[in-house]
Length: 168
Image 1 (cartoon, rainbow, N blue to C red):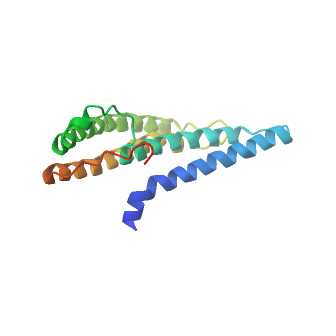
Image 2 (cartoon, one colour):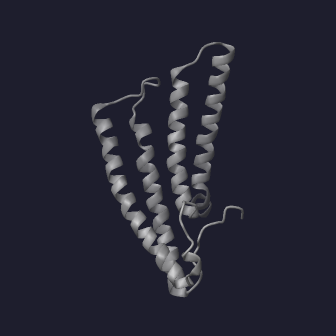
Image 3 (cartoon, rainbow, N blue to C red):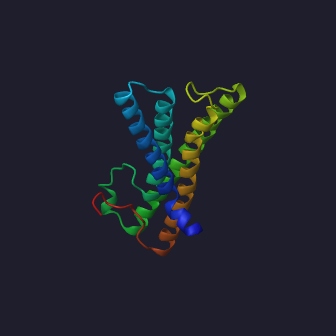
């Protein structure tokens, strides 16, 4: 079960947020065009679903090494040099993610301290502001896993996982 969760956690979360976004948007379009009435909560649900979708998608991209990179030079490197380049990239991204996690969580704490709520749903903004720290925490987890795999590839001389190609 843990292996399945490790492989598919982001996919299931992305599917859930995407379905919520599409259904809410479809309902709001029908309400607006057919009944000439729209709600403020529908817009908020779509907005916050999209925010979670983006941050969880970023963590998923880190796991799959699907983020944008220029890899012209990397193709000419051997397996050990590639592993070193990817390890260096993971370390830099890990440091950035730690700093971003700290500051994004600080924003959540300020919102919780002052009790800010959303305009339409009237629920605590903490639930929606948590999208950023959750995304960075997932990125840190996936970077740690990637780092372990890259170290193993470096030690054994096996080719490092470079991510899937666009049309694989």
